[in-house]
Length: 274
Image (tube, rainbow, N blue to C red; front, side, top):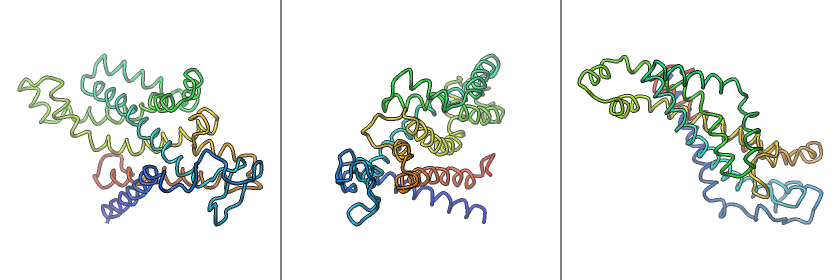
């Protein structure tokens, strides 16, 4: 019963992510208007949802639906690319630390501990401010501040694997460290890496939205869900839909990746499954 529920959770999450990916890929076909141009004569006065504009228009007369659809492209690009950077750093640190131990483990884990003491959002804000906001900068910075949890989880898995008989046998037969990591350790760590990638993507989406809300995300006029919420703050009372719809888009994306990650974790019976 537990496995069936986990499979359902995983399938629901995968379906939500696929919908999000389809919207991002087909944005030019799905968006009814250009997301960066004013299409309604209501400058300075947000337009309420109507037949022509199902989600309304913002204070500049831009279609909210079109901006949310194109915003999915930015969010997925940042989320997936940042997680790729995170995985490269985190998996490398975790494998080296757990496999070799000793001085390498001590140095890398102390570096990880130092990174964990720094609030990710504040560190990302500082780095983006120094490097100047751009799409490449955002995904690079998010990746650089988000690798610590993956490193710790991969290290724990690696520590348990290096004591297994098949790794000890390979070592006794004279297999080199790179071969043992590539052939014996990494494939067995792969399932937890998939889980951490899915959960990490939801985290990077939230961090990207937070940076955009603070004005440090992708520069305008490129649509961004976080910036849309920030631009709607002065209209919370008169036009609440301006913040509600991009907020729901963020909720959908984060929930989808979390359901997939936790469902996969529970279905495979990995350690730490809630």
